[in-house]
Length: 314
Image (cartoon, rainbow, N blue to C red):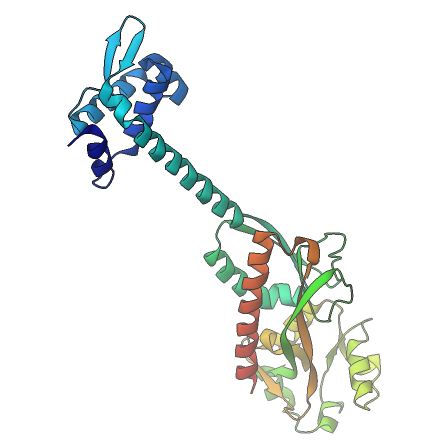
């Protein structure tokens, strides 16, 4: 078996690729010292690599001369094979590096306070478990982050984006229901009809300056005044905590209520329109592999989560 055949067969039987690199460095630089400097190695280590490769191949690869090391005929015979191995290793490294760059980076995600606090944490944990090299910056704000000004890369919104430069996918509808804590219901009773809900016997939790609930009741033909909500706050996280503490009856996204121990639905016949859930991204950065990966994965996670919420809400 000649040296080329031995090199080729050794590559499939536990062959050390570092030996090929050391061999080529000595071949191309002409001495152990120059090759060690080029590779950033110690000269004795490089010398041991050459000796180990010679033992594996059963041939002498270099002869000492006054000017350094001269390749033998055996060395020249395997030089092309060795360069092909090096080129293949470099190509593989470039592909792996490119793949890592497609799966690493930072994505800025915007969502409402409620979604950021109650809906997204578990999904982000699963997303990070799948893509640990992608960092997530979560912006919790009830103001719609402007994707056109790149205040966020991806936005979770409860309304369809209007700008043509945005790409949006509708995830589904978020159920909104009437809820109260079991302690509150023991104290004040469970309302059976809408009139019970509006009676002085019950405490309603509402918003302070936000007209969302007032407009919602008005749309159903039920005029309400701000003062009929004995507890008022515009902070949506505080709102859910007030309901969860048994302070009164409130209106919550089902995914929030399902995470508040002791909170139960009341008045199931009061059907409140769900909130449409959209995932939006700027068209220009949709092609970014990291942003696209997060967008696609988050869409699937959200869709599955909302399906579970709807099922549990029935």
